[in-house]
Amino acid sequence: MVKKISKALNRQNSLASASIILIITLFISNILGVFRDHFLTQKIPTDILSTYYAAFRIPDFIFNLLILGAIASAFIPVFTTLITQKKNEEAWQVANSIINIAMLVLVIFITTLFITMPFLVPLVVPGFDEEKQRIVTSLARIMLGSPLFFGLSYIVGGILNSHKRFLAYSLAPLIYNVSIIVGAIFFADKYGIVAIAYAVVVGAFLHLMIQLPSAIKLGFRYQPKIYWKHWGVKRIGIMMFPRSIALGANQIMLLIFTAIASGLGGFSVAIYTLADNIQTLPVVVFGTSFATAVFPSLSEAISQNKQTVFVDHLKKTMRIIIFLLIPVTAGLFLLRTEIVRLILGSGFFGWQQTITTANTLGILALSLVFSGLTPLFFRAFYALHNTKLPMVIMLINVIFSIVLGKLFSINMGVLGLALGYAIGDVIGAVIAYALLRRKVTISNEKEIFFFVLKVVLATLIMSIAIQEAKVLSGIFVDMQRFWGVLAKTSIGLGVGISVYSLTCWIFGCEEIQSVKAILNRVIKRGPDGTKI
Image (tube, rainbow, N blue to C red; front, side, top):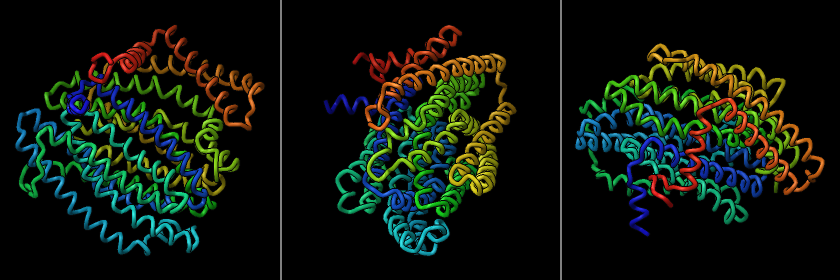
């Protein structure tokens, strides 16, 4: 059994199997995230939960600013180029250099933030009273341990991705969410929100440990050295800088949103975060997963000067994301209240919070397709070794989101923040695609246009069917009980999926066969293609 697990964790994955692994594990991870939020809202009063989400923003800012940009935009393309050229020794030198630089920088930032936290928190949540600001300070200091573990973990994950080993990388978020769930179920009653903060740090540590053995198996050996003069290290530094600025701007936007929400009511920070977590599930499963899986192939195609192959991968991935996310947008919007009630409606989370969260979710859902395509477009730029354009696009996105979010929140409250964020996402995705077309020739765009029209028409037919199913099922089920809400939601989803699938089949959408093949592979075969 141990040998089989080890073999599965260290097996190289094709694009198809990588997509399946990422879809399955990201789906499970996000389902666990749903359970995590369910237990958090059950165990923790909503206004106190707002302090946790506000505190989380600070260590998350450090991780995104210093690490995530380097891995996604710079480390993987450079590391992939080295291993493609069979320069394995140099690849490990670069990996060790980035790890050591990351540890050094993170320790400096974490120490500085720990000391200055009491002065930063009033800026992050000016609308919180003194007691809540004290809680935020305490929680943020505890969670400062997570960026260090996450930083190392994502570099190790970049090594695995470059070698097209996705299983261990994909299991890491599951372990992280399980840690928080365990903290909520077994320790929150006794220790309160502090238990969740410690669970975050433990989860980040486990996030690293689940991936490290696979990296060692590939040949990674830690060396306390930094090869400052290596071109790869210099290249990563140059490439990551624009991406770090972009991610930093996005994190600043979230901090500003948190500051605005802190003055909109006791639980507005939690409401916005919970709604965003729900809409993130389809974005990650049907957008980020495909973008992550295709990224090494895009980088490889460019490194081999095969632009036609690059465009082919890009177009196929675009179509499958659009095919999945347009109907998901409609389903999420139509069933938003039922979904929120099912996930969060227990314990301290009452009907008022449910309605506000559902309406916030409905607004965020409007930009779902654009949010799902943006990671793909950005990774296409990264594969082209261009991180400046994504930086500019992200800055434009952030500026629009902040200005519109602040403006709309004056009259709409937390719903205004969601609307500003959604409009910013739409603008960012449209600009990204327009600029990408100037870098590579995307052939047969008319086919994509007519394909989108088919998907939209199929979605409209599906939406009518879902609405009718909601009305009819509402007559027979008790919406005051959990099983009644579950039945109504299940009927709506079942009818919607069936009608959409049938309509797309009639329209001749080839993606219906792609999804069918993926599902058959998931059900009947393992990620490596062997029968289960």
